[in-house]
Amino acid sequence: MPRRDFTVLPPFATTGIGSLPQEDPDEALAVLADAELDLPYWPQLPRRSFLEGMIAQAARPMAFLTIDETRRTVGAASADDRPLRLAETYEALLAGRHEVFAPSPLEAAAWRPFLDSTRDRCAVKGQLTGPVTLGLGALDTTERPIFFDGELREAVVHATAAAAGAQAEALGAERRLVVVSVDEPTLAVLGAPAYLGVRREDALAALAAALEAIRRADAIAGVHCCGAADWELVVEAGADVFFADVFGFGSSLVAASRALGPFLARGGRLGWGLVPTDAAGVGASLEEMVARWRETEASLVAAGLDRDELRAGSLLTPACGCGTLRAEQAVGVFARLHALRARLREEAGGRS
Image (cartoon, rainbow, N blue to C red; front, side, top):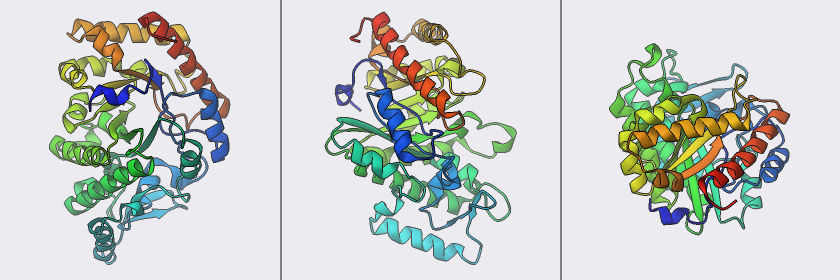
């Protein structure tokens, strides 16, 4: 993705990740309006409903998946229903009815109000749960992640790609800068005992399909992971921008520095997640965040990356979503993000 597509954004442009703790969509959007984000995004509201959790929200449009709100589980359709439900999904896909997979008020209460309130903005961001995380979070009738079932994994990949493209189109990618981020927290735990059966090539292919669908809709394809992800895999999958928890896992970026040089050279952008959103780090000071930025940037430059190119390709975000925080803590996260933007623009010699 050419960097000129980002020229509507200022240096160290700010945006957000995923969730907020508010239950009312208007209140959540008011918090984000007060944050004065350069790249506004629509928030997920997991406290409002189980359906707004990242697995259930992604599963809701997929007929072959079932949601039990009482038990708070997401699973595959029964063996008897599975063929019919898969056929229903593929009929929609083959007919090009991708709007079936777009967010709805049922599981994304802030989606339509966000569209209405940002019609005049020159750049916006959306997000959805990625196929790897969805495939590992939803279980079949034997309590096994559906990612290990080839037929169900393929359906998840195709349906997620359709959802990603539908969101990009609805956000207006044909007329303004639109970033759609695929949220993949499980990329940080691949290789752990519970996920030893996940082959790298399967994860790569699944993620690449979603990113390609976003690009086909004329949007910029992003990936977010709030842990020590394999960023080389993310670059290989074709991400145009990725959002990393740099405050907690900056070393994972340094480990991928060999892939980051070509990534930045082709116009890729890096979202620095420098404002902690976990219980242990949410009170971190501005000085601590700036120090973490300096430390990680210095390590990347020492590994061979160009400092000016790295800064030109930098965005700023919270480390992850704020859905687990108290409302006042979430407001504080965005206040610190606003202050961090001013500080880094000043330090890097950019405009304030």
